[in-house]
Amino acid sequence: MNNPSVISGISPPFLKKGDKVAITCPAKKLPKPMDDAVALLESWGLKVVLGETLSASYHQFAGDDDLRARDLQKFIYDDSIKAIIAARGGYGTIRMIDKVDFSRFENNPKWLVGFSDITVLHAHLHQNYNTQTIHGQMPVTVPDASKYSLETLRKALFGEEFGYKFESHQLNRSGTGTGILAGGNLSLLVAVLGSVSDYDYNGKVLFIEDVGEYLYSVDRMVRTLDRAGKLKNLAGLIVGGFTELKDNDIPFGQTVPEIVMEVVKNYNYPVCFDFPAGHIPDNQSLIFGKTLALSVHEKQAEAFYALS
Image 1 (tube, rainbow, N blue to C red):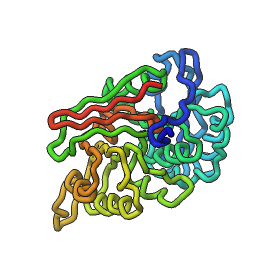
Image 2: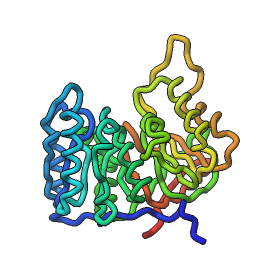
Image 3: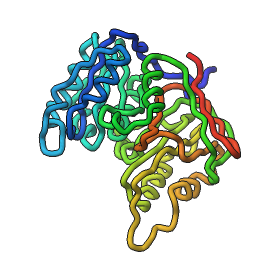
């Protein structure tokens, strides 16, 4: 019998030149126009459609919850749109997700791109519609993004092969594991626990990252996932960027790798740190819902997607 934890989810059709893609803003409002991102997408031969939310403002959000939901819904219903790209993260997606009907993904899946707060959408689409999505650079991060990270986004969208090789961290746990890649921002993974958007973690290769958190909060969130049974039966654990971390006046006393390894020390799957993804310039694209083979060695870690 096939193991469902290693069978890739449904892949939306890959893009081709001339396709239309939409940019919408389901969370925080934009600080400025997304000219650099539009130019980049057009250089790939794509036609870019901008949502109402890119110029909307309601407190810190890109329009109120109804507007942000309506903007996303419009692009889900529009069959001419082949990919929906979140302009930025911030906070707000969890406020509007239940106003959106995603059932169109059952028969007409399309690529969804974003990271950080967009983790809510990644998890929801994976768990409810078994749809692959792309954790990658967003329009607001394009000006500061590494060229290679943007190239991985293009490759993911257009269906070209790519993988990952990077130096091993001293606290990495060696081993190999294969499973569907899932995860995202640690704070949002905890935020959707127990909801209709919560991942089934069993047999998955889990990726986590975060930004601007206190070390004690990272410790609490990792332990929360573990107490919920989410970390016990993984095929592998990938820890990306944990950036702009904060500490209290009395130091917490552990780094993020030390926090993670203390929690998962009794499990047997491979663990790697400093993976090139997250709130960093070299935020290389990850294809959630696709089978990933992870191999962690003493001096190098690498990961490759199963051919499909």
